Length: 283
Image (cartoon, rainbow, N blue to C red; front, side, top):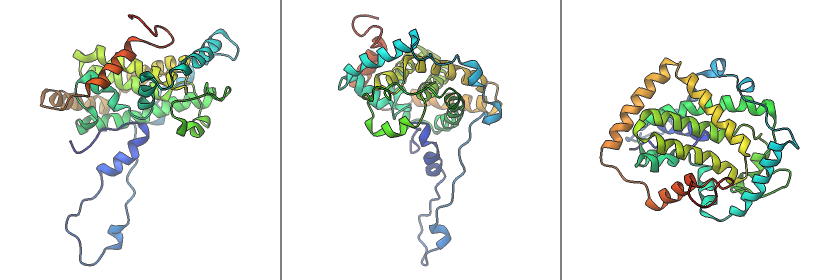
């Protein structure tokens, strides 16, 4: 379809501008200055807004205290996973850093980024709420990212400067991707296992990437689950969810391009082998 699904929360405004762009196939003889000036597009809003976003500060436990057992385990995991640089798992983590929707291509058996506009609309709004519930906690706990103190490697070096200015706990990528996984599992329950396994591995990519700790992603899943629970109280979300589910099922039933088999194999291996738990062998 012409309208591609969002690849991440940061793309929401750009997608809104694209979706609402005026099309004028007949050029005027005299240029119209007003028409030549792009009109500001309305910002895509979340379903809940600030007033109804759950208080993640109260819901989540505090991040591990420096020097505690959990903090030491987080730091040890960061150090150990630096050995993955250049591996397929590292490359997947690099991909997951910028591509949310594509993460669910293999579980669904179609290229979701080219999927129904109704799904794009739903997730663009969920992205705003995911950002709000995450930033509320991040700005309160002020927990530094794991790569900063050792000045260690990350899988997206171009993002280093920006990441150093933001906090680590909880993981925003995990909050949003886990929320997406829960919502997609509800849309297509026959694929729930595959969807949620991929959503878990997506969060683990943030640890592999070196920009989050295990604690960050674990509470990111709590954060995402909290968000989805409250989203279901909103009638507009429920209506959009029903519409998007019907559109997605229709797209899956119609002829469509399949995801690349090699990529799906890499993703399945990531689901089976969490690097700091069972890096080799059968799960």
